[in-house]
Image (cartoon, rainbow, N blue to C red; front, side):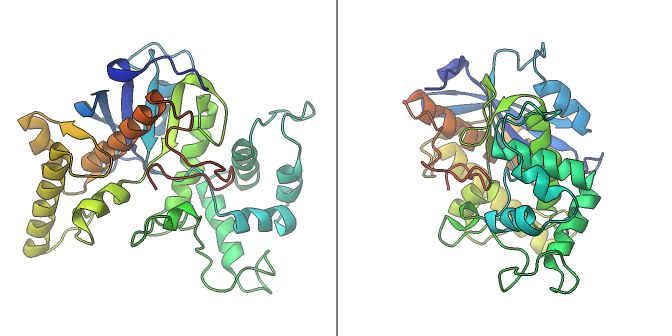
Length: 326
């Protein structure tokens, strides 16, 4: 079993609402909390203006609030659809097929890879350079056969999903190949490489520091369980009625979390000021970070009860990954 130093009430838990291009208007949002039994206490919610701030926080040997170890739920995909990756390996442009076929732990590599997830991330960064390059790569996959690099792409949309994206009946997370509108693919490109560089353990995907655990979370799973199809957030201005309805939805969602009315079996403990702070955020970033925090608390509890996989199912595809609680 993986040796995780902090357990129970002493374990620091994190929930990260991620963005591929943080700004003053849309920062990274990080919720901190600790669990005691079935109660998760929210400590605070911070905003990080840059990716560099996140890197410094989770870095190996960092002396600071995370030095005792942590379990973190991250709102971005840790993997890509296997058909897409297999197509890259067989038909991809440039040196991608060679990079993706290289053996793991190869001494001949300048940066040896210890997992398929790491090899894939490094190969994409070597070939694409930046998230715009990754978008062009995905666009090539989606082009017609005579223009794209994938001559036998499966029929239908290029935005195919992973198994875990549709593992919960009635709910679906966005395809990791979506690079526009909600640019989940760019979040994968920018997010996973930073977790790997910091040496974090990604259960089922990548070995790393035993006291620094990162797992893929998805706020929509928990929100959808409580609210169904009701919207609780928006980055855009809306009419008065829609704004009011989303405010009520956020209030209802927080009520349910505080009362423990979800299948996770956890109750969220908030101060009145914290409750108001979460509900007041019309973009929903603070609430999304807290939803990821709850999923991390569920995973940590499963580990404490003897589940070395932190609640993930057996046989997780190391290319696709898995969403916590799916």
